[in-house]
Image 1: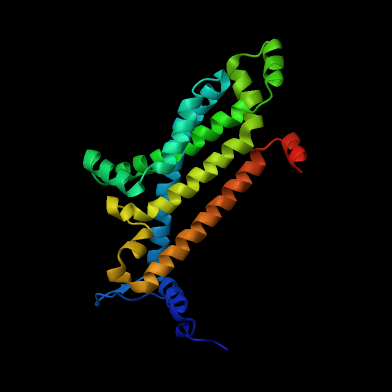
Image 2: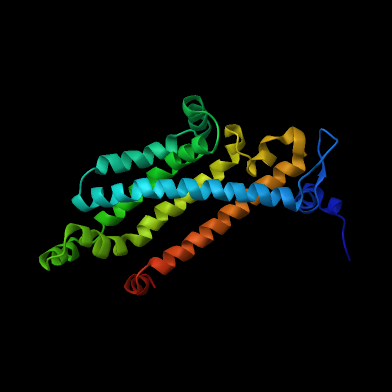
Length: 236
């Protein structure tokens, strides 16, 4: 037996909003529906992946070098603490004032939020590698670059990926305020309540949560694939 969406209250209305759309609160046009939802979800994912890629490219090499040489612990720890204290809305507003609105502004602001956990976890992961393994590799004549890439990095993958996963969740969640920077994402449903109504707000929140869970699962799978067999056996 088919039950009308109204039977489930606001959740039913949100379901209907996602799959069928409804008239805007301001009237005159239909909002929601799979077409708009997919467009905004795709843009949110695009923004998230771009910002995460920038954060990884900047933070990972820095964390590897600092951890390898055992320097910059204060910087790495301070970066992690600062990342939790940064107000996302204020950061985007500052970037908008400095370089204007648009994709560049948004990606830079979100990447800044993603750098601290990646930098901190990379530093910690490298420093936790058994120093005897590093000295043994050095005694075998391996260069410092090879020690980092072939010894320390593989052993630090679980910790590093923990930082990447944290950064990804921070970024995809914060991307909901992207419309304030001129880029429409699923956050538009949440911010523009006067247009989409309560059903749109709830639909946007649920969709963002589902995207965050899917991204977390994908990165967890990537972490498992990149972790060496020996590390897997040690953890099991």
